[in-house]
Length: 83
Image (cartoon, rainbow, N blue to C red; front, side, top):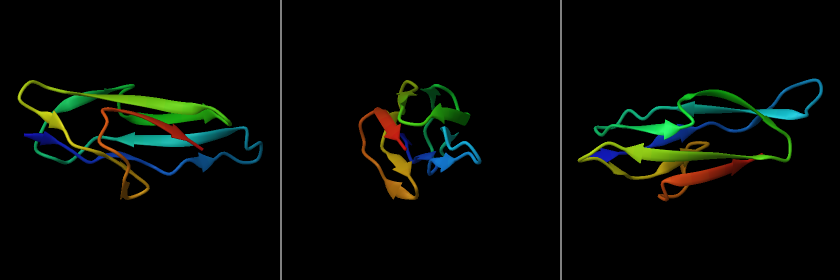
């Protein structure tokens, strides 16, 4: 089974200070299973900082790839997103 297409949204600046950006981590709708660290949710990240997410597929599943802003963003199980 593939655990694929874990979605990361476009970093969105928070107004009016613009000192932080928002990242939305959404679970896949694929056939496999697994978790991410950190878990799915909405995260506020300090401007200039990266945000690292790691995928852990369950037994008999395989991580396939990340999607960032609607486009494939690599197949390494760890990804760091920057503003």
